[in-house]
Length: 280
Image 1 (cartoon, rainbow, N blue to C red):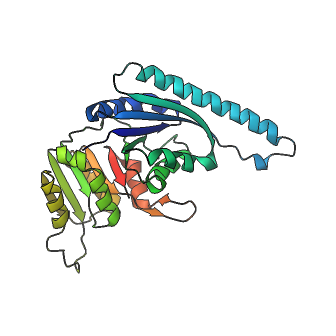
Image 2 (cartoon, rainbow, N blue to C red; image 1 turned 90 degrees about the horizontal axis):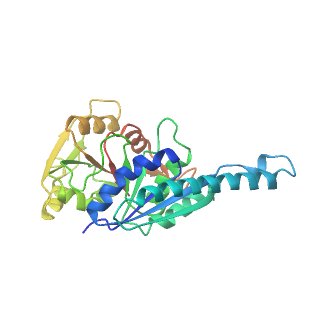
Image 3 (cartoon, rainbow, N blue to C red; image 1 turned 90 degrees about the vertical axis):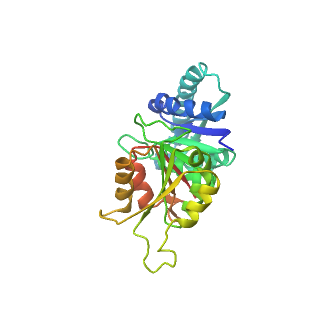
């Protein structure tokens, strides 16, 4: 049991080195095949230009997007040419409106999608769209990389599962099973469980039982929320415990797009200091 088909999607040349340096050792440890999709995204809105300019603008932006995708592909091939794992690279051009469908199609045939952090200074507006499309439309688990020296490990020292008994959190725990089983310790983190809940006397017991039967070494932590946001509590706990993996459900709202990451998910991704494995 493991992740045998891993996908990563790159749209920024600055992400090539850090993302591949994080992804390659993980793929190697899993004995996985790595697919890399290099996207040149055409972000123009041709309808806003004066009459007669649309065709010219379209051709110019398409050419720039092709050049960008090719530069990404060349950089990826240069790095992957020095690794022993099996891999494939594809360079494509897509308009912004087509990115979600393209990503979803690739993601649904992958065991895991590994992506750079979608929020932060200098991040393109398409970065959250890619994360959302992989999870919500592609139904794939996504590991968001923190962009620091905390690289994903196939054998985490301490994995924290943010648990609130939701369907999304349970799906994430199941998708993370290969890593949770291999971890030295799996901590089920519960923050302010409802007092009226019939299971409040022993929160996390059923999840603990399920994971333990797979061989995971589990402990349960129930803590009070002493900060304004749950996401702040989770991130602080991860840092205090020196965890090297966070597993959580991804929460979305079907409004402006087919899926928009909820506030708690977004806040955690903005400040994530370790790899975050999400699913829904």
